[in-house]
Image (cartoon, rainbow, N blue to C red; front, side, top):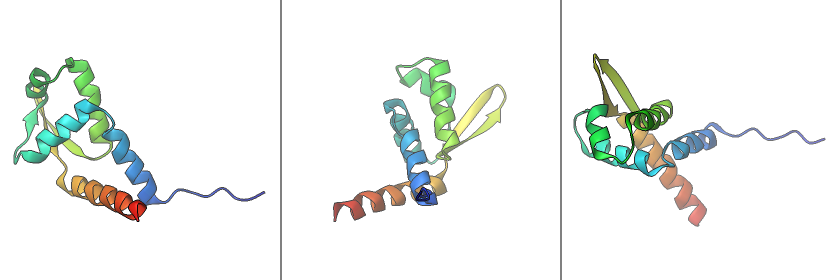
Length: 103
């Protein structure tokens, strides 16, 4: 019986980033944070988006788990910023994935 192939770290990272970006709310959050030179509070985001606080919290959790954003607790608020290093890495990995598969 042939040994099953393990996925490379690049493949698992692209999948992790892609999963995090697989919902319109998360795409909106990433676009907003990527254009800001500052952080924003989750309370500000809930006023802009068509989701409640608990749903927004879950979306932020997914983005944070993937390493695309980072949060700081400043009671009673949570401030979120884009993780620039991982966001750049995700952009490069996705670009390379689509570019190389396009050839």
